Image (cartoon, rainbow, N blue to C red; front, top):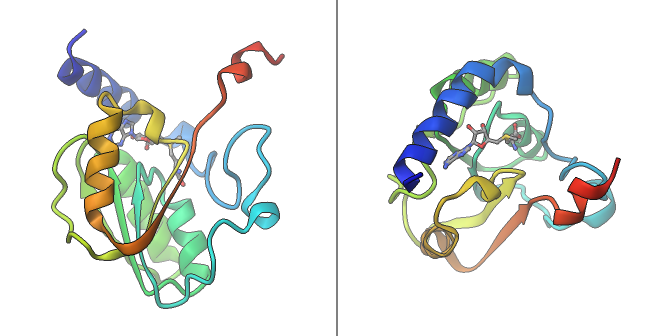
Length: 160
Ligand SMILES: C[S@@+](CC[C@H](N)C(=O)[O-])C[C@H]1O[C@@H](n2cnc3c(N)ncnc32)[C@H](O)[C@@H]1O
């Protein structure tokens, strides 16, 4: 399959199944069998900071950071249905975020050299271009900005 076909297939899947994944893999959880953010403290104090989530899904991790006083929240996801759920979920708590519907592999319409944190919770492994995606993420971070992501270990498939 060509990368664009994979992206299109994944987009259809996530649009059709968005409601089944509502809040399932979101901070403080990093993933299945993982220590949590409450254990790891990978994020320092996010108060007033600018954060971009890659594959933001239903917006639960964005809300986690909003609850901790984040200054600016941006989220990218290829599923408009996920973003609709995220916008509704955030607005229930009086929060807003800049939500962008795009594959992470594309050049995103976000500021460069801007974010204190770019992060992705259980999303980055769906990229069809890992190096290209990492390069783009680096360009969105400001100097000394931090990239945090989680994905499963291949051993995960061997654990009942
Ligand atoms: C497990 S969910 C992540 C949930 C999210 N961490 C949260 O807090 O709700 C994975 C997300 O990755 C998105 N996704 C999959 N492939 C993508 C791609 N190529 N570019 C952008 N988003 C993608 C899906 O639409 C889905 O919302």
